[in-house]
Length: 190
Image (tube, one colour):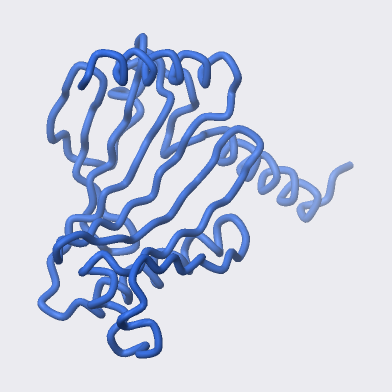
């Protein structure tokens, strides 16, 4: 006879396994557009394009766009684009750190790589936000999961800051579809 504790452990394990079955939000790689629309119950529909469906969402209390990118009606890439405007550039770094901490808790701790293209502000941590906005500094952290590569990045150009989390399939058949599509797009000059 199972004890209450044994039953509780089984329920928790089943919940954990079920939660890990999804690759992005509530869908798996290869999901169709219809499956994505049916599964996305938390976001507010924003727009649909030929290869993308976009929803407004909240991630770590920050407004963002959840973008599902499908090729041949199969989900291959997904992204969060944070849509926050700050008057103080260092606040973008605070957002990045808060999102990074949430990702570290969900997966495992990663130390972001600091990539400097211009070292003007490198010795002045109080100006790192300005360095990001100016395009001098990018912060990048990557997780390699069994089915997914996750990249958390913040970078800027001409004082426009882009903060994203990208999820990309590692399933060979879907990677082949994505790479063929990217090659086709590059060849078409788009």
